[in-house]
Image (cartoon, rainbow, N blue to C red; front, side, top):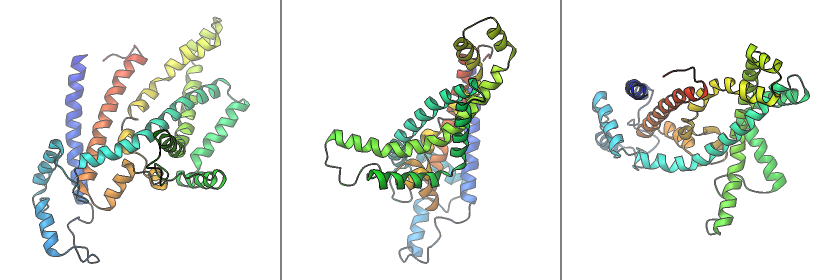
Length: 319
C-alpha cells in the first residue's frame, strides 16, 4: 500500500512539474502582453509601464520569471496584477462563493441520475424509459445559456422574485434567518441549471452500463437460480456497473475550483469561474497560472482517489 502511495506521489509530482512548465510557456507565448501600452488609456504612460515591468520582473528571462512566480506562489506572496491583492486570498474568497453551487449541483446530479438510469435500464422500452430518454436528450440539446435565460424570465415574470446575484439587494441588514433563506433561494436556480445537463448525461451513462451488465451470463444465472430481483439488480449488477463511475467521481474534484463560467456570468454569481474568465481578459498572469496550477493538483488528487476506490468497488484489482 505505502509503496503504491510513494510511487504515485513521485509520478504525479513529475507530471505536475511538466504541467507547470508547459502552462507557463503557453501563457507567455499567447498574443498580447500585459506590459503593452494601451493608447486608449492616458494613465498607461511609458514611465508607468517601465515601473510595472520592473516590479513584476517582466524583463527577466522566462526561467527566472518561472522561478520567481512559483516561489511567490508557495510563499503566499504572489499578488494579482489587477488589484495587487494576494492571489490565494482572491481565489479563496471566490472559492467559498462557488462551493455551494458545486455541492448542491453535484448532489442533485448524482442522487437523481442513478435512480433514473437504473430504473430506465430495468424497465427498458417501457413508458418510463422512453420518457426519461426524451427529456435527457432534450436537456442535452438545449444550450445552457438559453435554458438559463428561459428560467430567469419564467421565475421573474410569474413568481416576481429576484434571482440574480447571491442575495437580494437591500437585505444586508436583515435577520439571519431571512438572509439565509434569501441566499438559498438565489442558490437554487443556478444549482438546478448546472445539474440539469449532468443529470441527463449521467443517467444515460448509468442506463447503458446497467444494460451491459444485465446481459452478462452471471446475471442471467442469478435470475435463473430464483434470486430476488432487487438482489440481482442492486447487488450483483449495479456493483459491477459502478467501476466507470469511480473514474468520473475522481475527476469531479477539479470542479471544486473550476466553477461554471456561463452560469456564474448569467446569474452574476461572484464565483471562481467568472473570476478566472475575467483574469484571462485582463491578462492577469499570476491569477490565471495559479488557478491552472491548483486545478492540475486537484486533477492528480482525483486520479489518486479513483485508484484507491477501484479496490473497494472491485476486489480483483490489486495495487
